[in-house]
Structure formats: structure tokens, C-alpha cells
Image (cartoon, rainbow, N blue to C red; front, side, top):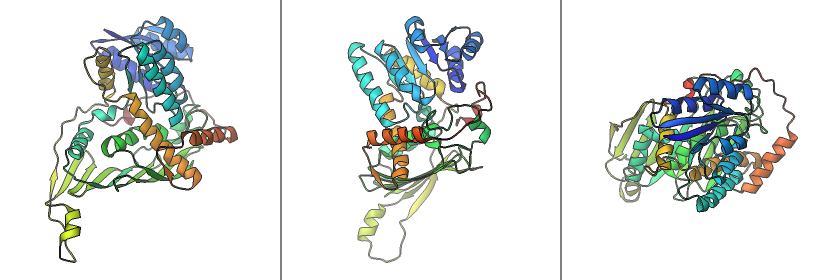
Length: 389
């Protein structure tokens, strides 16, 4: 039995605790939250110990590993404290608010791993377990699309009401969360983007702050990416569109792949369109292609349980991690770059100027005059409607 503690027992932490107690080879070591009533309620619900201070929980809780499910700004310090003790860490997305903090976490992990052999540092990117994303990655890696030309992702089905933002004092503020749709809803999409087609080298971002909600952070974003191989990318998202769209198009020289509404469709070119451009002696033509649906197998669940059990198996040395947390810096950097470009009103290059963005975020916090009215603590809300499956 692998003993896992949950630090932060709000909406997501409670979901993770449920997955742990349902597992046959995991044991919930404790729950921890600075809100003592919330921690006590979680302890009663799951039949485990309650802590109100993560340092004490790490010292006394006798856990093999911890899941860090606190507000974003707390992820680095808690993760580093755990790793320095030799405790394995599974951290919620995003691993940090900005890339400089993510890099500090990675450096601490590398240092701790030299002292504690086999230390595991994982991230909750459960969408990497989904059958359709795995199949698309397989097709790209297998060369079915050939050289990639364009990737466009319209992901505007992250609809959120004002009530959602009002049910937590930390939500949608620069000081409490450090960002909006890119930092809260889209880390999964940004992680998948780079997991599928790699990181861009240049980013131009356009964002609207509190355009549709009474918040001070971004709730609508359009970004343009340039990749080293010449591919261009587009990323469009918002929390204000209903019914919204979730459509991914990946165009390569050998065809176009589209994922929407659970279906992968592939218009497969008979020959390379780039070769056709160079060699065909006609002015007007199209490459002959066949349209087909690509089959895949999918587990049909949110995926958190799978990542947690993979985390435990990695602790035992039985499996490779699905989502190593050191890769989490990529999605953080990509989101940071979009917002930094917006604030600078110019294209930015990757690797990101991490100190520059950190300074900009600190400036936003210092100059904020936003006053937030919190409706309720928000814990206990059913997160199921938010999960893709």
C-alpha cells in the first residue's frame, strides 16, 4: 500500500482523495488545509487524519507521497518542502504561476533526487491518458502527416459564470491566481499543444482582461505561434462562449487531421502537397485525398485516478511517469509568453524572459485596485461537469 497525503482539500483535492480511497493499492495518509473546518470535514468524510499546516503534515503524516492541490502560488514551496524530505510529489496543474518558479521547482527536484534516489515528481496532466490525444500524437510521431504546416486549436468551451469566479477569494486575481483562462482552464490544452507538436520559438498574444466577467485577469485570448520548422500555430480560448467550440486542426504535407466532438477525421493526401507545389506543371489543382475516420480506444473517465495510480506505480519503480512535472514548465512558459506578448504589445521569443515576466506579474499585483466580493468558499462543488472524459 502506497500512502498518499492530499495537501489542499478544496474542490480538486477532495476529488483526488476520493480516487485514493477507491483504489485497492493506495491509502489516504491524511488531508491538509489551512482552513481547519475544511480539513476536519475531509478527515471525517474519508476516515483519515487532518492537518492544518503542510510542514507538520510532511513531518508527521507518514506519507510516501503527496498530492499538492492548493491555489497555484503555493505549489512551488509545498512541492519543494516535500521533495527536500524525500517525499514523492504529484502537483496539480499548473505546476507554478510563472516559469521562473517552475524552474526553481525543477532545480530543487534535481537537487533532492541526488540525495533521495528514485524520487518521483509528477504533474496532473491527466488528458495525456485520453485515447484520442494519444492516437493523434502517434500519427504525428509516425510521420503520417509528414512535415507539419499549421496547428489551429479553437478551445472556447471553457464557459464559466460570474458565480464560479465569486466562489473563491483567490480566483481570477493577479495576487491569488496569477492569471485567468490560460492559467486555470487551459494548462491542459497548452500542455497537449506542446506534447503533440512541440514548443514554438516566437509568440504573439492578444488578451482581454475582464471583458465578460467582473475579474481582473484574462477571460479571452487569441495567440499566434511560429515554430522553428516553419509551422504556424493558433490558439483561441475564452471562458465566455457558450456552447463554445473544441476543434483541433493539424495540417501536414500529407493531409489534414481534425479532432472535434470525439471524432478524429483525416483527409489523407495521396502525395505530398509540398512536392505538388514544387513539381506540378498545372496552375489550378488539388492533391487527391481520401477522408477517413481514425479509430481509437479511450477509457472514458476524467483520468485523475489513472495519473494518481501511475504516480504510485512510479514510486514502486513499476511504471514510467505519464506526465513528468519537469515538462510542466513548457505549458507555463507558453501561457506566460502569450500574456507577456500582450502586455508588451509585441512578439516575444522563447525561451521566455522569465525574470521579465515575473517582474511584470509583480507589478500587476502591486498596482491592482480590484476589489473582490466572495460569494462563498466554494468547496464541495461538483467538479464533474468541468471534466472532459
